[in-house]
Length: 352
Ligand code: NAD
Image (cartoon, rainbow, N blue to C red):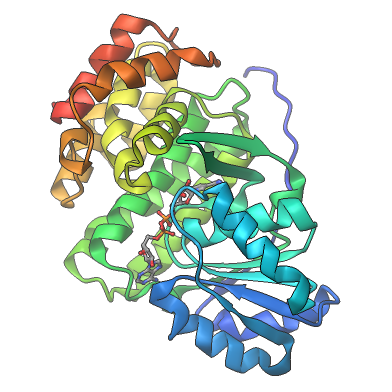
């Protein structure tokens, strides 16, 4: 076995059905008395309103300002309203975009956060914040953005449309795939990664057949937590860096971009990380990890080509330059020609 170092992150996790109403207790356990609820258009009249009713005078209001890729201008706009609200904590009910806004506010205010994730993106379990400014998405790691409490309520995910379930689920799988070949991989995160891929590989096809399959919804949310925990604990490489470049530069939809790029990033690293690929393949029950990941996305109706989600062919070269501009560690060296080939394959949706 290889030597390793591992720092576990603090985590308080409530997992179950109907747990939204436990948020009040959690808030009080943190010693908090007034919360701003962050949510999105989908949950504003549903879960966020239900939570506001449960919290009563402990809720200062609901903000639905969050958008994808956490633009700094939106964060600053919400910040400007915080002083009048007299809040001492943030509660996010929604997907990665809502949680992103919560983290961006926590970074600037030190307010504690309770997050109630409703997609499978996994952001709730990480001390990572991606923010966009002037078309560039940058990420930072800080314990100031790690939520104090995660409340998983499976009931809130039952209506998550199949399309978003699949793409955000593959986004979570991407965290685990990169964790398996990370420079600082360790036995704990590798175990979580394999189990997380297995849970989502089992659940996503069942959700695609019947979005109200409760057991599959449970497994998917559990998988999302495991995969998010991996993302929070070890460094990411080619796949995540490329997706950030594509998302920030061309405003491509986050989860779809991950779903498209992942099989090609896995193929790029396959020879350099054979053991990681073996574990991904085993978790998915396939022979070849990159094509297995591609087939999973295609069978579940996720997009498989960047050209279909708003990227133009001439953007490939721009993306190659942008991706090479800030070097980082990757199992296989990041080379211009191979990177261009990867992006071309992802652009046209070629099966690896
Ligand atoms: P999202 O939060 O934008 O949600 C996608 C859509 O799903 C939205 O329209 C939302 O209203 C809807 N939705 C959410 N939950 C729903 C539900 N239960 N039922 C019906 N509709 C629902 O998308 P996402 O994929 O969850 O998150 C993407 C964002 O998260 C990106 O900005 C990305 O950078 C960030 N992210 C961050 C990390 C991290 O560790 N920092 C990890 C993963 C993703």
